[in-house]
Image (spheres, helix red, strand yellow):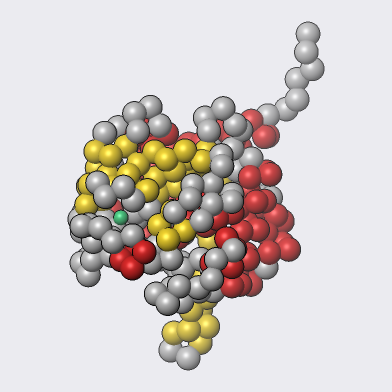
Length: 253
Ligand code: MN
């Protein structure tokens, strides 16, 4: 069996006086457990080479992190906007568009869901507590694997089929969320306050596209956690696409 190569978008952070290119290891653990090979895609590659970086790969995860700069959806920064990273935004937007044109399966997580929505023409709440206050804390100060609020999944969606449940209590570490949904996306999960927690592309198009607002990777150490099935689904879709891509052409008749 050929193991799919799954690109994971990373960031640059300064630690102990040095810039470091990296990603939370939980994403890599989750992909490895699903049978894929995690490959770090780091912003210094640059937006112009995003397509080249993806060419040998079979799938893509757009990961969590800083707020998406509101300039990408023609909004002024709100006072409660968190730190932004223009270079990472530009690189990941290029990764998204290149992955779509190459037909690569894409899983967006937290910031990744927000980036997918912006890349496809949607907008964001820059800060839920000040712009859309509700009863559910979406960024509570709890451990990364603490399940704090329920989401309801749309029957028959990729998300619901992968998780095989109608309701899931998830972790939640976001102060931004989807405001206007991009054309081409369907909402497949919401919290009880209406916040969008899952979206996906239409089932009839070539590219598999699924994005979630919570952090399924943080449950990689929990045996049989349903969240791991999202990575299983990404790796499976990536293997199917890789097989179709590499299959020899057979002339009709
Ligand atoms: Mn949430």
